[in-house]
Image (cartoon, rainbow, N blue to C red):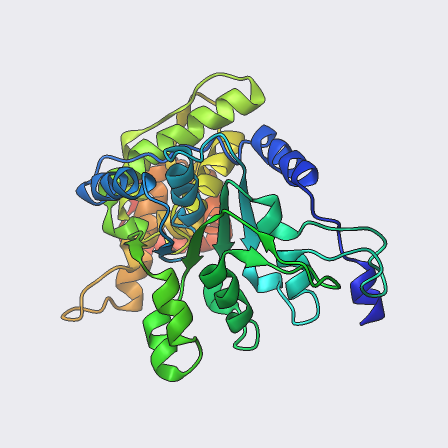
Length: 342
């Protein structure tokens, strides 16, 4: 515990601003919210609607859907846009450090408190605080947060003097908070205090119209980042991206496009530069009425690899991560000899 307390970082408006400047240089805050689906348009309409109010907002959705980007958009479209936006990862909050991290402390209030610290709430005064993964906050810590939301003041650790704060609270979660309330894992009074406005961000697989615009945006971002030429998706690569289910959502798509940009030796993003699981998504997909046999899957997989490599046998073997001889046996078994180049 002593060691943990010594690791406390002093929280001030200055170092919060410095952290954001560093993230902005990395492209973190410049990542645009892009799409053309009806679901995307509904989200943007909701952002515009709630931005002009100071009420709390809960943003829910799977990991990687862009919940923090939505929170940034709400902040940047609000009257607080000239003030600071402070993100807080609730998964790192511990009982010992919670009050100090959020509400600050005075010098000498505990071992390791070598100077005063504002805490995240006072650092965000006049702006917005973003509580990421609020569902991970322990039951022990939830009433302390509720008190601040109700009274709009904090008491730093080691002090008896309350400090008034003017902060808008936006939360995000990938969990069902209502179910957590029913299960007794989240306080009902805190839930109703936070859940004034609820925005749900749908997963990328349910808004396929947004996949290609996002993919092109991420490719352009790589070109700008590396100061190199723009690269574009081939039709075949685009089809594979749209068929894939994207369990990691927008974040996964960004990583896949970065990898494809780096591995592509030309200006075209072709299927071979995509990850194997994306290339084989349609091979393994099927409905409950017909589950493919192993031979059917193997034939479709070899066929897809041959198409991707334009019939080049060595490239196909490398793509499938099998030997040259085994690939020839599969080609003969499935009568695919006409699909490859000798």
